[in-house]
Length: 88
Image 1 (tube, rainbow, N blue to C red):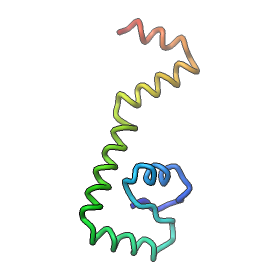
Image 2: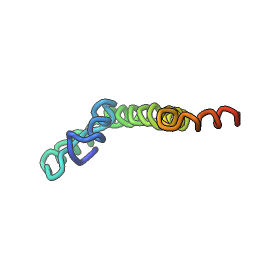
Image 3: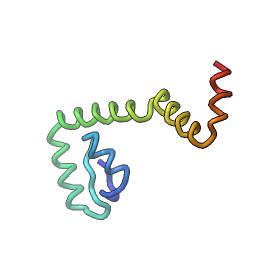
């Protein structure tokens, strides 16, 4: 359960990956309803947990993060990648 701005980046990732539920800050009744629903549905909790792990690995596994950093570095400092390649 993510409690925060439903228009923010974390909410977008949670909703996109279907790995949790977004509850706006300050909405106690909505939070209570979500918790009741999840408490009575262990299969959905397990499925959301599985999807969360898959989303995390897809976005943040070291090989993915390094590839994105190298891509960004190549755009702002192309010479740095020449050094990196010669070190392999």
